[in-house]
Length: 493
RNA sequence: GGUUUCGUGGCCGAGUGGCUAGGCUCUGGUUUGCAAAACCAGCUACAGCGGUUCGAAUCCGCUCGAAACCUCCA
Image (cartoon, rainbow, N blue to C red):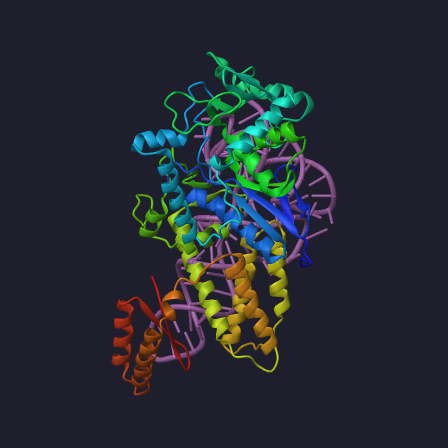
């Protein structure tokens, strides 16, 4: 069913690159931690979702039947585990004086808009935490039954100490419990319901004011944040599934707790391959809401932000992110963005050139190398920067064919065009930003007339008229490029 | 303090024991009525100090520096 592939994935759990073998071919389960919808997603969030968008796209390209689950956290994201723990969404609702569900709807819509702008494919299933309260309660019951959780005063905590007697709590993040203890001594002070400092809430008793709350065997309350991912991933992908992704910052405690919960409830380690995307930094520090250095997509596009010299299109940003490895931090800078902007234009121009190439009798160049190089680099843990480098290598060939220095046969040309379409548009998910506006027929025909007129004046060596036309079009952001026998036009920024 | 990771040229960023990354910028050239685009060539590199090796930017050790996580965060 799936193509011959030697896809390797860096598994955060084993800290090595492993060959990817689906548990139940041709199906592949991919779960990605989605946003907590209590405020706008910023660019750092986008990078993470983009990483897994490309993973999803490439797995699909390889012929796998991928079920991609990305959740929406709409409840249970407690500010902390203290007894006065507050829910992020409720806090926001109180601030904005509206219903929690209104907050959820507002920022879920915002999230979807953003994600569309960056051309991220929608997941197969986008479950919400509030839609799976029953399953969460059932999971808590299983954990309690197995002796890995205890109830105190209407709340339920995961018993990390008990768990670590039989299992390895910290296997994902590399943390050791006794070391953790030394560092968190301060947190043990005060009246805490937990038996052990590392225990975490899986059910939290609701206070009087809490709006979103549910009945449970332990009274009225809300589920713990880590629980929803454990429940929803295994509900839709099975007790063991292939890939779990998320940002590096979720590795501990969130993902560590997910493992503990699943093992605690069902005795199975749910995830075969853990993937963690790295952070977006600004001037060397992580972009985050709390630090106030985050961009909203609108600010990015308009350039209306103190840290931005100008606006950048979503595709420029997408391309910029793809030019770095997902496992590395990327530093956001204007110089880098401008570099990406020009690089993307070059790539898109090259594809335009490719689509207009005229085939020759036979090829003087080897197409297969370019194609297999792209596959190889994607197979190497989704190495998009390398893939892009190979695409640029191919561009040189395309341009020299266009210049008449090399030639390409009809079947090779077809292959090459298919290859660029597949890799650039389907796998990397880039979109030609000018093409949409160029589908207007009247516009195209008008431009044909103008270009024809200009051609006439050029033939008459009436340079001033030819230049006038070019300059005036330039004012409308239309640029004219002359080659030997014809002129082409396109919109520019 | 602990865990994880990293330090590559003007900028961004791959790579990995011996073979050109790539993009952007800059310089020179080709092409062009001019421009743009394209093409060719050039320019600055692997934090520092030791070690292993025939050979290291790539492995090991130390030093210096940076980041994330250890509290909510993609």
